[in-house]
Amino acid sequence: MRKGIGIKPIIFVLVFILLAGCSLKSEKEALKDTEEAAKQTFNSSEDIETNKKLENFSLYLPEDLSVKEATASNVILKNGDQTYIVFYNKLEGPTSKLNYKSAQRDEALLIKSFEDPEKFGYIRVLSSEDDKYELQVGIGGVKITTYTDKSSMDEDGKNLMKIARSIAETDENKEANTD
Image 1 (cartoon, rainbow, N blue to C red):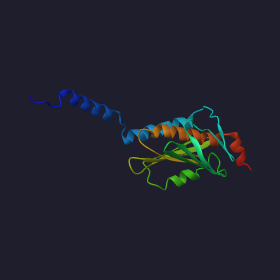
Image 2 (image 1 turned 45 degrees about the horizontal axis):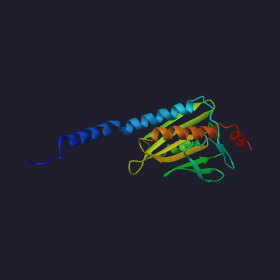
Image 3 (image 1 turned 180 degrees about the vertical axis):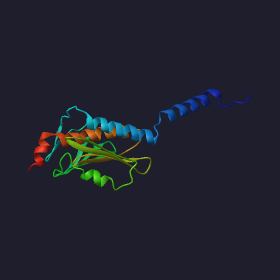
Image 4 (image 1 turned 90 degrees about the horizontal axis):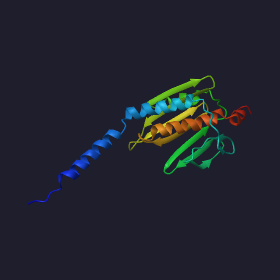
C-alpha cells in the first residue's frame, strides 16, 4: 500500500484558501469603505479632545501613535513601521480649499470632498508600490498623509480625519490663526 498525503490535509488547505480569499476586500470595496469612514468622521458631531500639545498647536493623537519629530508646521507620527506626516498651515482656515486643489493634480483612485458651514475636508487615495496606497486626508490648512494597505485603509482614513478635525476645530489652534 502506498502512503499518500491523505484527503484531510488537502481539504483543510482548500477550505483555508477559500476562507482567506473571501475575507479579502477588493480595491473597490476598500476605497468605498474608506470614503464612508472619512465622511462619517468628518460629519460627526462628536467633540474631539486634543491630548497632545506641541509647541505650535495641539492635536488628538490615537493611543497607538507617537510623535517622532515636530517642527512649527510639520509633525511626523509613527505606529511601528507606519509613518504619518502631518502638515498644518496656520494661515489657511478650516474652510480653505488650497490643499484639496493641490491634491487634485495627481491621478487619484479616490478623491472626495466634504463640506459643512465650519470646515472643508477631503480624502484622496493614490496607488503606490507593493500593494500599498498613499492616503491623504485634509481639512482646511491641515493635511495628513500615510501609506496603507487595503485591509487598514478605512481605519487609517477614519483616524487621519479625526486627527485633522482635532487640529482644525480646536479653539486654541483657531485663535493662533488670527495672530
